[in-house]
Image (cartoon, rainbow, N blue to C red; front, side):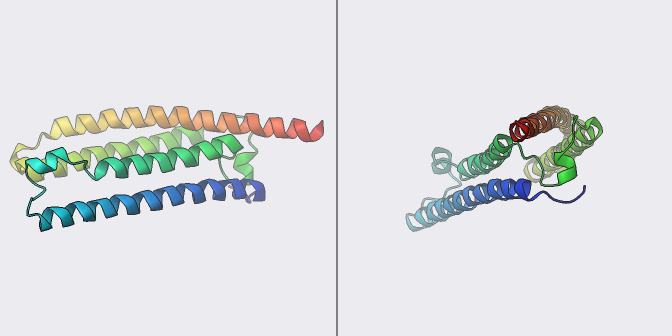
Length: 177
């Protein structure tokens, strides 16, 4: 990938630092909420795994929101600065490297598709037993998630690289002018 550009590395570090603070603080708050739910449920002798649990805010919701916000903030900071990667060679491309975009998108799609299929199978085994797992349905859902993840990551990565090229060209013309 070539040497790292110090300006790009600083932008990348800033985006990651802010995202990690959001993720850390949000995760700690969600964990603390879960501990309080369990503590209150045990001291009042109201088990959460009853109808009471259905009326509570599940811990997964704020944790998922925290993770999404941390990722979006990191991506937004990198897009705003025009820094996609701190590697100089990657940052200095003049055209979108389509082979790279396709490979990264395929990898992202494969990971999401396999995780979706695998997690559904594990959940079904736990809930209904291995004899009632809908194998083809789970594989089909994994394939759908592969296609969606591939398409989304393809568009986002291509746009991100295009925007970084546009931003770099604007900086270059500003420095020359």
